[in-house]
Image 1 (cartoon, rainbow, N blue to C red):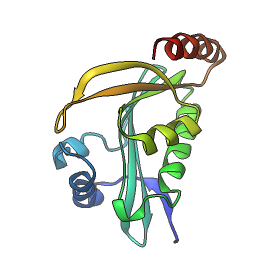
Image 2: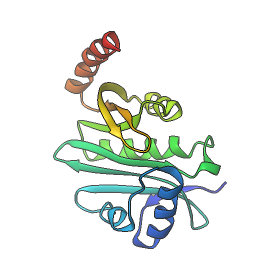
Image 3: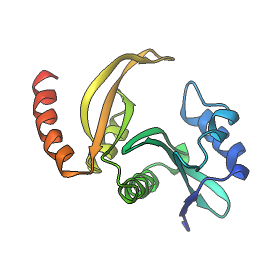
Image 4: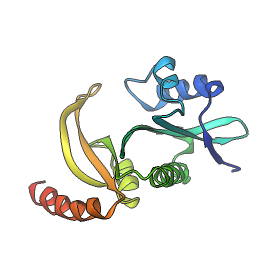
Length: 165
């Protein structure tokens, strides 16, 4: 596979929307995806091979805080390191932007995604009850801390969260 990771572009919107349909029970519209394209407050990257979008991840940032919106990998391309590469690249971009942390939500039942995020240093910091629809399910809020003060807080949060779950 000759995969590369690049900034998402307008021309990719139809493929991104199709991927949304495949991956999510409540997919984003083309307009919603378009609003996430790279700009002064967004990073949006795609894994591509020969013009085909294999996966993507988007992040909005405010000041030194990053919020990962969606992570998607085409179902037939999963377990091939694409999600791993996308998260690693987004983390690298977050560090270059001097973000203190990046956070995301993940379905409680999505064990493969939870394992992927944990592998990259994201830790559970809370839950959002009944966050998802179709089916109704709670989300685990996971955060990766990039600065020393936040790394110390991560250790405290991990202890607190792991004793209450």
